[in-house]
Image (cartoon, rainbow, N blue to C red; front, side, top):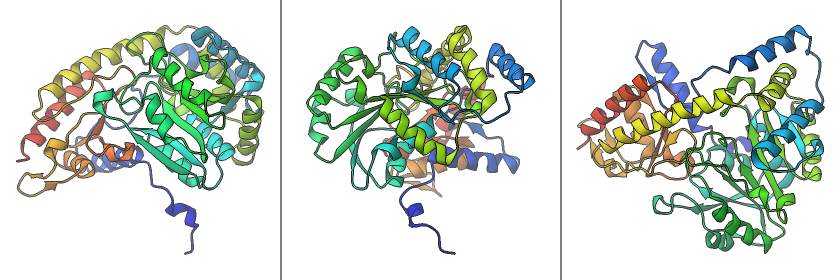
Length: 396
């Protein structure tokens, strides 16, 4: 069989692969604890579910506009003004089937063969792979735990060349939980003012899951706003992962370009989901705030449990629902039958020996670490971390 060479340019997402392996192991009768998937374990709030049911009863079952229902695009604008003090019009908004499609639309609309896309590491696994699919060139800036896994203006400046088309970053960050302050974003904005050919993709999907105060968007700086494309959606903050609803906010020319691409691939996002999204974005956020409080409690517990594992160090996350511990002290060690040399092998070792799914840090651009999601119940988190601790203790 002769398949496209495009398939050789990118890899399967490690987050999905580990979850799949965990399901396969569970299907064989093993008690597997999932600490790998970035999916809230909470149910969608009742008022949003009622809106979805109402949409079914009202026969919202026909093809929606490619860009999204006008009422939903207006609702996104209302949310951006309410939460971020950002002024957008419906023409600035495109609704897609999840934030991942929003990112893919954007990269396909902006990036030509050979264009460089700057990505601070660690980064969400699909950033680099979507760039590769579009024949762009990912340019990585490695950040460290010492810098809070945040990139500096000087590092961005040094990475920009005449071929640079875009910078992609997230705040709060997946996988590190790093959150950029207004001052830090202002510093980055200063670099982009000097390089008007560079666009900025600001992934704000974890906006509500923030433990340090007000979310800040780089789109707040008016003189670069037309080059900022906000990526957001409903999966994380509203526990609506299966509804598949993401959106971009950006300059009308970019939105139109993304709409043109989407029109040939999926057309409009699910009609019922769109009606439920209008309610989610414009009504009570109390369920989201309650969910975040629970995540914060889990974060405190998992940070304490990590501190009790010898040889593991971890920055405390300021947002999202992951920890990203440095586990490199275990590389080169063996339990007598298995030797662990890198984060890939350590994740497989933990899955095999402890029956706990995690994700290799290599997939996020940092091989010294692994990602552990605290999107499971506290009892499961405690048991999973105890299993990991016991498995690592056998490596000598």
